[in-house]
Image 1 (cartoon, rainbow, N blue to C red):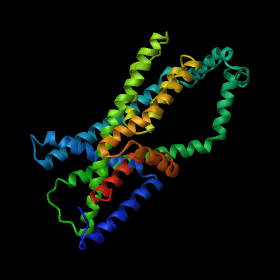
Image 2 (cartoon, helix red, strand yellow):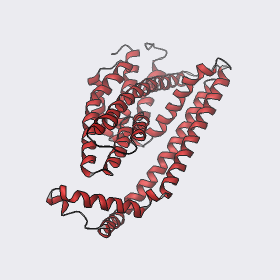
Image 3 (tube, one colour):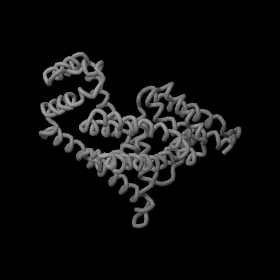
Image 4 (cartoon, rainbow, N blue to C red):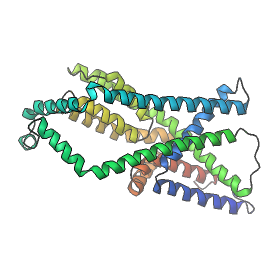
Length: 337
């Protein structure tokens, strides 16, 4: 839709407000809230056509919101319950973990370079002292990290609540918006559309990542005589976590390296090196897959990722595919690119 004299001022104002909003989202740490709201809104839109076959549009949206909310609450509850059970188990007790780590250090001491093995603790008491000193030195950072985790959870829940409210409002019939409100609604609609395309491209990316990881864990390592525990669980975690851009890879890689560490320090190093190489190669594949969904070249997305990571750090890295595809969508509508 090209601008006309009558509509130019509200539309231009909406572009300015949209740009300012996206900038503030990154600077104020609200990316989790924005993406969780867009995710719930996209899932509602995905479920409504199936439910609408048996119910009206408004009822379908209400049912979809209730269903998704119930699933999310159940998943969070099960996650908390599983973490509590694990932490209370003998395998996860602090003395047991310390003893296992001490045994692993002792077994690896003879295979490590002298300069590295000489700096390792001699026994479990030395390991305890190192951990105690580290916790004491970084107590302030740990407190801040705990507060940030709490904020992220609150932002996640509030974002999903807002997304569900917007999805329900769309089903309440026709709305008559004034020019600026109508233009802002169009900006939000385009952002939601691009988010939807990027997210479903991310599902394909996660599948590819899971295949590579599964080949490594279930084929390459067993053929080499290495049998890690929890292989099926690690493959499942790789797929689920891979649905989160960038951060998901960090989560799955951490789990794999920790499990590999239970086998040997060398195995942990091999797993880490494999994951780093695979994910570096996947950056180009990811850009191509997402680019095909949002009409952008791989080099465009890679450039956007590089620039936004430099300017905003990890949040910019995660937001880059969605924000860039949204900007290009708006420019394309005005026939500027």
